[in-house]
Amino acid sequence: MKKVVRILGLCALVSLAFTACKKDNTQKVSFTASITQPTSNSRTHAVGFGHHLVWDAGNAIKVFNNAGTDMDFALPTEGEFAQQATFNVDGVDKVNFLKDLAIDSAYTSFYPNAVVEGNQVKMVIPANQKYVPQRNFDNNLYPMYAYNQGDNFIFHSNAGFLNVSVTCPQALSGTIAITKIVLTSKDATLDKLNGEVFYDKDGSNYSFVGGTNVITMDQGAFPATLYYQSSTDFTFVLPEGALSSGFVVDVYLDNGDVKTFEAPADVNTIEPETYTVMIPVTVGNTLQIIH
Image 1 (tube, one colour):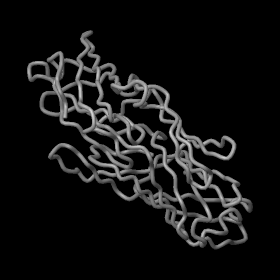
Image 2 (cartoon, one colour):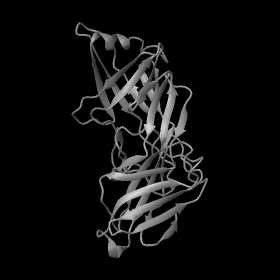
Image 3 (cartoon, one colour):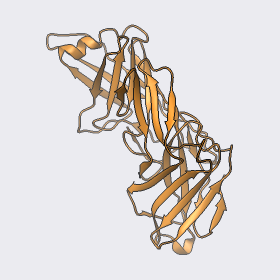
Image 4 (cartoon, helix red, strand yellow):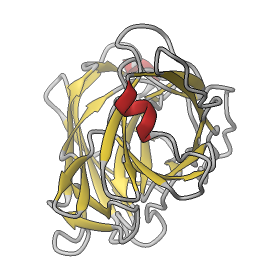
């Protein structure tokens, strides 16, 4: 799933609106995936710019029926997909698998890269995340689950987002760049930032098995040039409850400098389905407090 530029919020309620599942002699059916647009608890005064959450080519969802059997459904590997995308399903087995869509809670679904481990479904919030410019985040990164309500699947998540914005002094505008940014919570034992997300196959009993208290962003569209007039944004996917102990951001510059910014405990705790945008910080000082 791709996040088009300058999102200020994420209340990731994704509606999969299915077209009529009428079988024909070719055993084909199609359904559409519609994404409810985001809101935000942004700590700035900024407002949205009219951009959206959209599907990416090749995005796949794993769907379970009440017997615990699963099938994967994917978008084409090429093409542009906006707020609503169409999944075309071919073949007797998959068409028959979807025969109970009229029954509420007959199916659950998970996105992305869901794998089955025993009676549970696992997804991962990785310790290394890619930099995608303009308050965007990487495809196939944000873990979600869904129940069907008739022909409608409504996706929710127990993960959220932190956006860190960085600027530079006017004299340095356009001349320096970030090569890596590292997010670290202050409590290495209790405040884990990456790890494994688990649900039962029916979407119940969410649990998070934490890995470490660090997420490193050193992949993607680096170097990220800094400008005086506008901020350069870095968006992290995090489990709910993360950053309750406060956090530190280390910003690595292409001139060899490392700038450190700190945020206090409690006020920045990550909420599910929420995109939290921090007030921009400016490189040039060794230490700043961000709110």
